[in-house]
Length: 302
Length: 322
Image 1: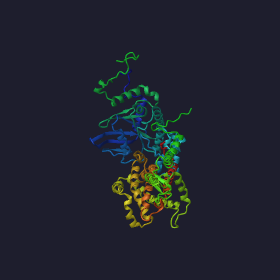
Image 2: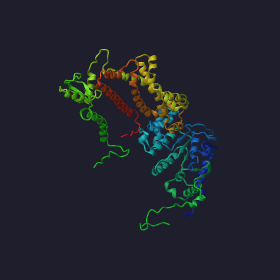
Image 3: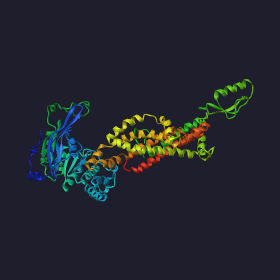
Image 4: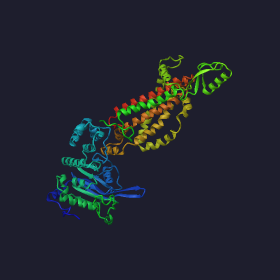
C-alpha cells in the first residue's frame, strides 16, 4: 500500500534519543496509578477507563489521543479534580489530588471565559482567588496577556474576541496561576484549520519559554505529533492505554515536517492503533448511485 | 444601489426604518380601528342619540336608545301623525371616541377632584406606584436571594421548591380577606397581595435562571482555585445578573397585573379607585384615559429599564429581536 518505505516509528536520531534520556531524568510532575472510572448508566455499569498508568516529567508535552468514546475527556476531568476516579489515584508532585485546584490549570474545549469580565479581569481572576491584591494581580495578568500577544485587547470583553483569541486568553488565565501542569481538553477543536495551526505554533512557543508541563487531549493525529514529546494512545471500550509513543520528530518543529519520514512513520503507527484494519474493511466499497447519463461527457469509474 | 431589506424573510433582521415604521404601525393600527368604529356611523353605531324627542314623551334630548327602539317610536309617531323624534346614530356610552379620551386624558390631570377628600389623578397614580414599589421590593428582597440559593444549592431547592410549587397555584386575591384581617384596611393588604402574587413565581423563575448558568464556567472557576462562597459571589451572581435583570423586568409587569385586584381590597385606592369611581359616574372617557395611563407607565418603565440594562451589562451581546 505505502508507496515509499518508511522507517520504523521507533527509530530516533541521536539528538532525539538524548532528549528523551534527559526528559526521563527530570522529576515526575504528574503520576497516574491504576486509574479506573465506572459510570452507572441505563445499560448498567459502564467502564470508561481501566488501569491507566503513566507519568509526565517536568516540562514534558504529552498528548492523549484515542477514538471517540475512549474516555480521554473523562481522564482529563479526573486529573483536573472535576470528577472522582472509581479506583486508583492521581499524584501531583507525589501528593494525591482529590479536588480541583490552581496547581492544575485547565483549558477547556468550549469557551469558558467569564463573559462579564474583560480580558484583563479574566486573567486576574485566578490570582485574586489566591488572595493577591488587585494591583499585583493586574500587573501579573498584563504580563501573561502580553505573552499570548493580546495586550491590545486587555480591555475587550470575550464576546468581542475571535475563537482563537478567546483560547489564548484562556491559556493566559490558566498559566497566570503558575500551575504545575497545564491540562488542555481539545482546546483548538472548535477552531478553523488556519487558526488552529497558528495556535499550535503559539502554544509551542509559550511552552518553550516557560517552565510548564502540558497534558493535551486531541483527536487530531497531526496535532498530536506536531505538539507532543510523547503520545498516550487510548483505546475505547474500555478506555485503556494502548501504547505510549515517543515522538521521533526532532524539535524545534515546523509545519513542513508533516511530510518528513519520522512524522509519517509516527502517523502511520497512530492510524494503525486508532483505526485497526478490521474484517469489515473489505466490504467498505461505497455503493455509488449513478447521477449522470451516458453521453453526459463524464468518465464512468468502474 | 443600496439593497432594500425584504419585509418577509424568515428570521432576518429588518432595516432601522422598517422597524420604526412597524413600531408606529403597531400603535396606529388599533387607533385607526378605534377611529373607524367611532367616526364612521354605518360601521357599527348601534344606538341613536336623541336630539329632538318630538311627540314621544319618555324620550329626552341626549338619551341613547337602541336603533330598533328608535325605529319603533318613529313609526309609532308616524302612525299617530304626530311629530317624529329625531336623533343621530351613536356608539354606546362605554365606547367613547379617541378625541374624547384624549380630552379626558388632558382634563383628568387639570381638573380638581369633585370632593375635597378625593385625590387628583396623578395622586392616585402616585399612590398605586408606591404600592407596586413596596410590594415588588419586599418580594425581591426575599425572592431574589432565595431563588439564587435554590438555583445554586440542591439542598435549598429541595427544601423550598416543593412548597413554593404548591403555593404558587393559590391565587393571590384569595388571600385578600385574610390580608385585611391581619394587616388592616389600608396599604398593608394591598402590598401583601402584590407580594404573594410575585414572590413565589419569582423564587422559581430566578432559581431556573440560576440553574441555566453554564456549568463549564463553574468548572473553570474551580480549576482557577475558586472555593465555595467565591463561586457564589464571583461566578454565579455576576454570571446570571443580566438574565436576573430581565426576569425582574418581566416580574415587575406581573406585579402590575396584581395591582388592580390588590387595590380593590380593603379601602379602594389608587388608580383602581379612580377607575371604579369614574365608571360609576359613567365617565368612560376617564376610565379609558386611566387605563391608557397605566399602559404608558408600564411601557415607559420597561423601556427605561431596558436602556439601563444595556448600560449595566456592556458584555451582553445585542439581543436580536427585529
